[in-house]
Length: 444
Image (tube, rainbow, N blue to C red; front, side):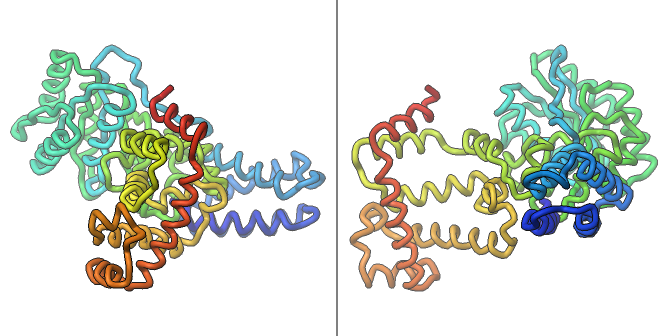
């Protein structure tokens, strides 16, 4: 998300940073490029103009022109205005109520609503340690009821057996009663969707909302719809009292205009973003972190949280203890590190969160991703002995491995060379450094 906007904004900022002094004239000239970048990112004209007016006023009013480092001062103004546009502070779910906390999820068909319900349940279970019950009121599409049941089984949460012959209010009330009886912390109600907004759907959602009075009403919107997503959100906000928005498919949206326009248009905060297809690919929305990503400053906090939540700590601890005993880092270990990286969303996801690398062109990211995949395929084509003792891999072995992995011998040589470099780096992790790593993994 925001790749195109990020590239354009950082290009403008770099051109300003290189100047000895800024004037009102060259600030206005540069902000004209920012306006183009915002419009190309599918941000509405009125919001783009408001954003630029605010930046220009603050840039001139806060003595940016006389600053010792005017380029950096202007970056801060742009950064602060991005945060203000995205929502100032992160908005968390309100779970402070007598259980069960009722969460109602609405949205159009095809937005990823039902899958997002399961992702949200997984997030509540794993990060908030809440018990969760899922219930579908989509009587118009029985397949949706079955889909939610399967997803509930996959993530090991409770599921209410909805009857498509009942009306949505009857289903929701029965599900809430079951949650109360089973002492379940939270219940997520998945509502009916349509391919487009129609009056019948809106009336059904409005009536259901009035009857069950959910503590949270979350709208799921496909970010790739751009300005149409904003219009959809406005229609829902005019019908029911929303408490937040979940943007899906942000990993496929290079523009990001929906996120920049959403809060101002609806008056409601973005609470989560969907960052991929996996069940754990849902993360809380932090305006300050997203603003930093847009300007290529990285997002180390989210990267650390991803590592803590998604890395297999048992495997990492096993590897640390192996090094502590003086054993060598081998290709089996290397393969596990590649798999851990994939669990964290792959190289593209990591690059967006590393300072200075977030603006790497998409083609370069794709190439990096393919390189890691190729490495793992090559290692998978080796025998266990070759993975544990790479020094024994000779010419004939390389030809067999290349044939088995669909690669060339030079690809095998390149992998082995990169592995040797990593092996040398890992060999330096000894003594107090290794003990510190073990202490961290064991939570001490």
